[in-house]
Length: 74
Image (tube, rainbow, N blue to C red; front, side, top):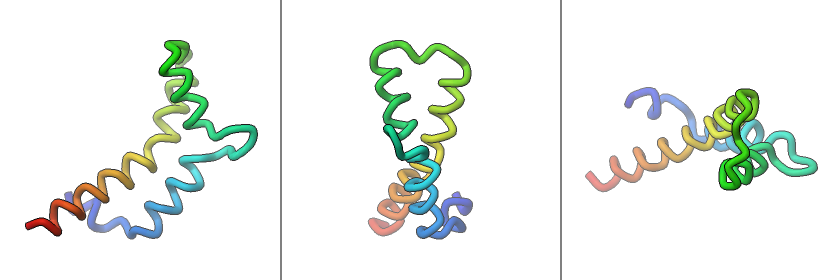
């Protein structure tokens, strides 16, 4: 878990807002892929890879937030 502690908050937030939302127009990839997932049309390998790539910064930010909350409660 020390990896999460070593990642600065600024890098995690900037990563989520840039890579996590890129491209910004016409709609963020993460939003497009989540809609595809909910409709059941996320079947092509490139779409699955896109979902994983664009959700990774968000997962890092969420994991870092949960870890910080748990450490604060101890």
